[in-house]
Image (cartoon, rainbow, N blue to C red; front, side, top):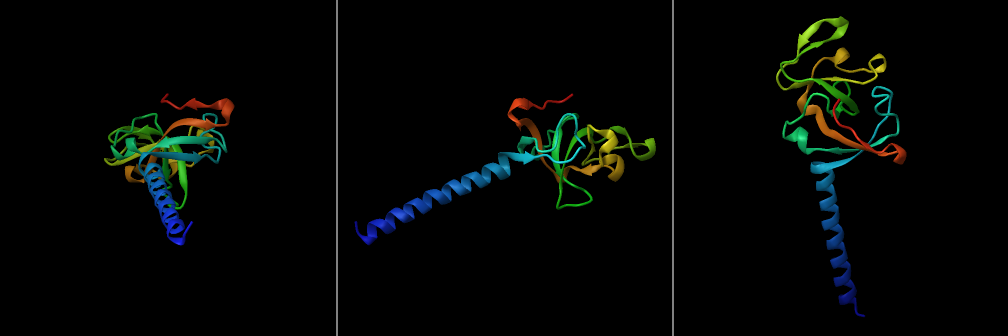
Length: 153
């Protein structure tokens, strides 16, 4: 086998590897991906080290609904992601900090953790811009004995 054949096979393999990498990147960036939960704010629904499958299409199409569990950039620390439930949509009247009522402004959502006693959420930092939402949680895939869809309540 000559150098030309080895070189051609190597280039062919590299081409397939590059195509696979591009397909994988686009799938995880635009369709859905896997996220590991950490922290107590969504207990008992989600626990630390649960692995979730999330989809990116619903937030991009602005089809989020009250009750959806989402992954978003933290409004106070953009290097961190948060996992919360949407409890208020634009125009909804919600109870904020110190039980004061306020309306969710256009382009924002109100996020709360299911474990309200141990969750830093919209009651602390206010309405969250919809542009910070990365994905909607579809189901828990780990641990295996707790695989389930995570539909709205």
